[in-house]
Length: 200
Image (cartoon, rainbow, N blue to C red; front, top):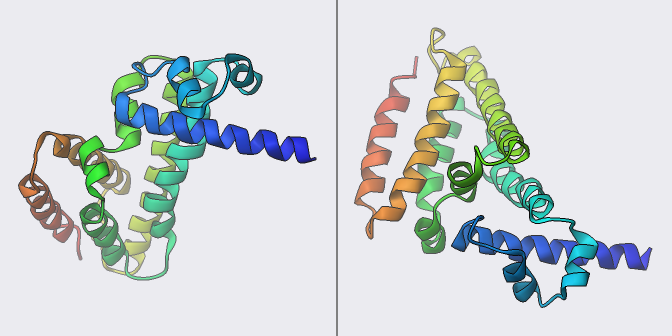
């Protein structure tokens, strides 16, 4: 049992360091040797836990990327309250709260989608699974808003969900190009206008 726990802790350490390297330097630019150096592990010790970079990449997506999106963008959609207020809080207020480090590097999921989304079918499926979970949670909230008479009944829920995800992910990427938040303020202004048009 103790050996199993030790193994799990080691794997979490590898995934944590690999996530940081993928996020800061890019997935393709990060080698297994880079991960071994960051974790201070020997080649034999590393390959005892992961057979390949592909396997490690999938673990990073499952343990780090999915958890970040679930905790920050999906779980809050299920909270009780006014649907429109929840949407505004998540897509407008949350983006203001990102630290400089995340403004500088963008969204980890979006970075991976752009870099390896069409590189390997297993990565594509894992990343698509996250987007689908996010989209489905948004659809449930939008439908709830219709039931509350806060959102127009004729609004196509899936189209709105995909638009909100795409706009949010897009600005996270574009934001990396600017050294100030003017572009972010313009995004927030445009999104606020869009959300206001959904209201009953």
